[in-house]
Length: 176
Ligand code: HQG
Picture: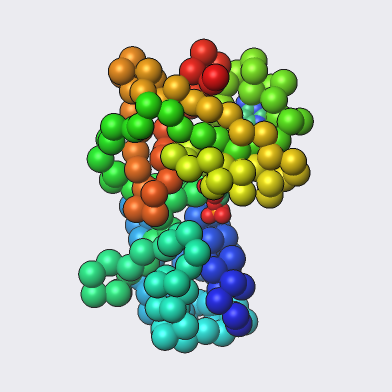
């Protein structure tokens, strides 16, 4: 398997569906590395610990982390599974961005940004990243979020280990 297909497989397993390879995650989203390798192999996905280390180290978005002694691994964000990442609340910059597409805008104008299938709404401090995220679905439509105002009104923000800003929802009035 090449690095990209390992990364895609890991995203699917560690964020959404560990049971497809009969794997269990703990409450914080961690999987046992040996069991992961073994269960991947048992399901026809062959890669070595060394290849896994390369994917974790070189992944373009730093999607995964090991624990200190590399016996456990988890996705840094993006889960649909209910996991508690134990991230401390953080103070966001005054503005954050969200990349979406025009066809979602009518609904977003009514209900604000919702987490949909994931555990959080994903925001970024970098416009270029928002454009990339939006362009996965078509012509990107970039929303500017008044995250400073949201934070001062008591809404919580978390910064994932790979630099994605997470929050529960963005009410319409904070979308610029
Ligand atoms: C939209 C990638 C209708 C929202 C990226 C988005 C990101 C609404 C879609 C990460 C809505 C959800 C997450 C509402 C939000 N009505 N549509 N009220 N509220 N939406 O994939 O942010 O490469 O769950 O705009 O880098 O696109 O996988 O979220 O278009 O960090 O590591 O509903 O995925 O990371 O889509 O992407 P997603 P997202 P990875």
